[in-house]
Amino acid sequence: MRIRKALALALLLALLASCALASSDHVHMMFYAQDPIWTTGSGRVACTFYYRCSICGEELVFTDPEPALTGEKQATCETGGYAFFRAAGWNGYNFTNSYEYFRTLPLGHDWQENWECRVEDDHLTGGTVTSVCRRCGKTVSAEFSENEIRSETLKEAAPGAEGEQLCIVEFTTEDKEFYGEFKLAIPALPVPVETVEESAVEEAPSAELTQEPAETETEETAETAEAEEAPAENAQEEEAPAEAAAETEQAENPEAETAAAPIETEGIEVIGPVAESEETAEEAEAETPSEETEAAEATEEAETAEETEEAKETIEEAPQETAEEAPQPGAPVLLASPEDAVVQVGGEARFTARAQDYGGITWRLVNPVDGTEVLCSQAATVFPGLKIPELHYNTITLRHIPVELNGWQIYVTYSNDKGKTASAPAAIILTDGAGVLLPRPVPPAGE
Image (tube, rainbow, N blue to C red; front, side):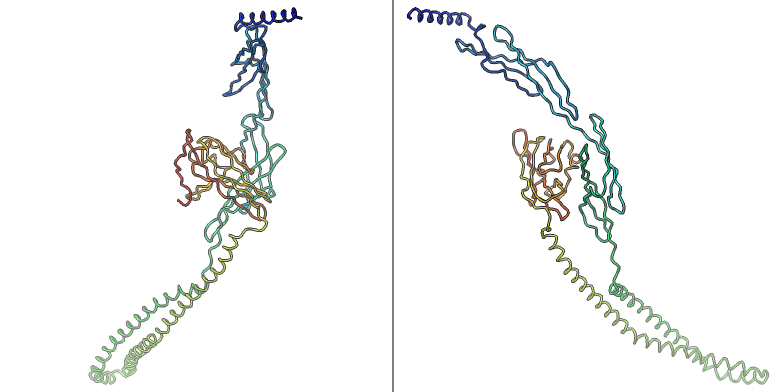
């Protein structure tokens, strides 16, 4: 028994002696302490090996920074790809290999859409849309009808002023989901025709204006009559010598009496119009107060009619305003609104809202100062570099957010055939690379 213990002790001492002499060259005693670990980052792949001596416990770490690419398949728009790597590790005696297989997801199509819409009587009734992938060139065409169109009034039409409506086209085919937004003008309402009372108000001043020329004509007629009376009196003074001459002419010419008669008749007819003009002037003066009275009465009636119409319009407008503020029966029910997001410039932010009983979703960006709104589907044209991949879900992600969006807000509108419901807005707050809040170029509403 003692001999066996002595032999075992001697063997152990021999092994320890050989391990100590070998120092770092633990050739036959080095084993994997753990499986090799693969890491990826910045587009590079690396593999780290971990070894441990089974006798003294010394550890050895070796990293292969550039494993060999032994097989690869590029991803396409519709199919994924892969990359197959082999890494070599050194344990002090020989190399040991490790293999790893990396899968890549499909790239997805980069669609460019061309819409051809059909408009009849200021209404979008259908059309055709063609999508072409910029990467692989795949083409998908589809037609849409009124069943795939939803309309939303952005601005009501007014008398003499056009309105604006938003037409949303949304449908799905076997190959693709289509979504488009188009703005159409709403024809202006006709300008209301003037009422009888208003026309009477406009005619009343004209009656007063025509009154003064009438008096002026009467005065001129009276002056003309006075000027004609003076020659008539002078004619009477010269009548005596004229009678003597007339008797002489009658003796010589029997027809003189007949010729003299018209002279007396003309004198009588000259006085006649003067008398008539005086009566006309008196009648005009008597009628003038009555015309002014009628004009004043017409003006009072017109003002009374206008006040009555304004009162009616006020009574009619009150229920309409109340109806707009009241919730619409059957409209979508809002369950949650998006929350404010603090994000670095150029980063991404995610906003989530929830509702029930809705059929359509529309996200919008809004300037809280002047109320300017931008549809998220068109935000890339207003804010270059901004990416919004998914537009019609409860969660929306804004990527590569530019500094121009600092201080803006985002909200969502849920709609169905009974009405629409908007969420509360959420603020987009940007920071610099050090996490310091940027001064808002657009201050919040109310400041």
